Length: 284
Image 1 (cartoon, one colour):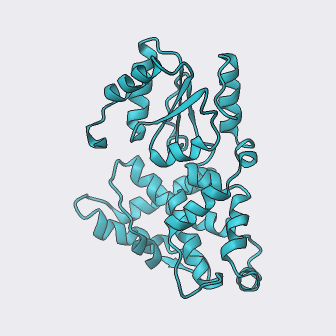
Image 2 (spheres, helix red, strand yellow; image 1 turned 120 degrees about the horizontal axis):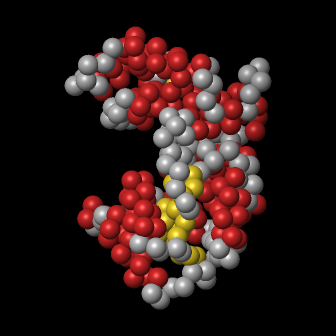
């Protein structure tokens, strides 16, 4: 069904609903985002709608605003758009503080609550001994390295599809590091086999990006961090012989994420400020 949705059909759906609902509409990328924002919106005054894709959000947003539809706020994941300096500046359009919703949650104390549920305290302490980093910092650092590869691929308009097995193959859990050279060698040889990709040139572009010292919370992708966390729990989790899926961890993280955590984000503050100027009630 969603493959038949277009920006125009999404805009028309919102217009139709607006004839019966007098509040503001919050347009987001997908169903997971709808579930997330529904936890924090005032349903009597705000309806959350999925556009099924970032580009659909952008285009439906433009269609509605150009037709003088005012009761609209749109939120998208930052992804790599901020780092690549290509996030569109549009009225009533906002992005997440971090790479995506998953990293927004992972950056909060919700991660500690989930670790308290799944991580064996003694095993985790032993794992962290001598590392001088928290689990959050280790997962973020490793996720950022993967992010460099994804970001350069996106900049070059390459279709990078890294599987979970690819990431496991190049992650050393003993040191919690990513074999960047090995990962790039693999993707330039096997994943980008139809493209004329020079491995040394690809690495050089990654190192240029690293030298810019981008915000790791914008660079690291939430799904990658969730997978890395799931892998680490096989070492210090209560049930080391039963792998917890990244999807299951993300669900647990969403449940552990409270309104007080969300209220600390820049996204929350910016949307609240914008809504106040229009006398809208969006977030509770």
